[in-house]
Image (cartoon, rainbow, N blue to C red; front, side, top):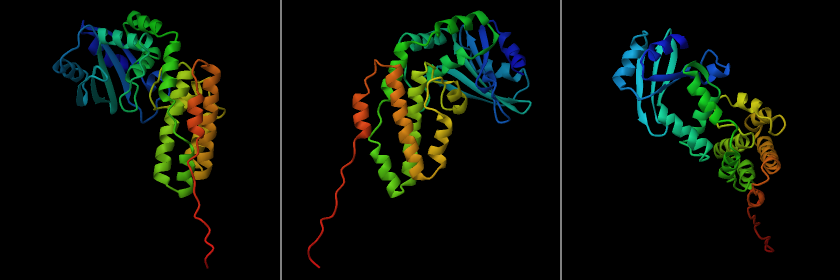
Length: 283
């Protein structure tokens, strides 16, 4: 299916490359997955050109998002044979600049939860190339090896853990919604640290189990313990999350010794003050 769709687009001489990314490229797609395609253009097409090309292969439900500065691409979606297809369209110069921002400027910017430029770098690294292999190989060469300064920037950006005693207090009070909302934030920060330490371009927070398995540097049984953070009782989950955080700090110190964790550890271990009602002598 990817080859059929790609052929309709690559017939346009302004298309210089095409590749599959996402779960299909990783080999982990399931019955809920869509097909994700990327097209590289010498000059971006008009909306009308994209719609006409998609319709030439008999698609249904065609939609397109306005050009977004975060993604710097046209993003269209449609259905073919009942499967959803998402196609991104980048100008070649734009993709060149994204790669430069990641490997030379150590880009750790994000939109919401997604590190847009690093995710694009990850897609390029893992691409199944359908057309324009030389162009994709050029970018893949630029992206390897992962820059050491990017690892430092990723870690430093996410060393912003607050005193973990706050989680203990929420646990004691059974403030369940706030506790688990904070747990999600802390787990994402731990993953961000580990992507940096493992020198993996941040792919986003989908297929977390797959990317955790790919990591060589991580606390023992990391993903299984993440499950326990959310699936055990509140006290047990809080204890597990503290252990995972401390073990991750240890790994950062071991594998990125140029990053100073002294202030972060002091903040993480700080206790909130407690007070007691005075004991009255009166009856």
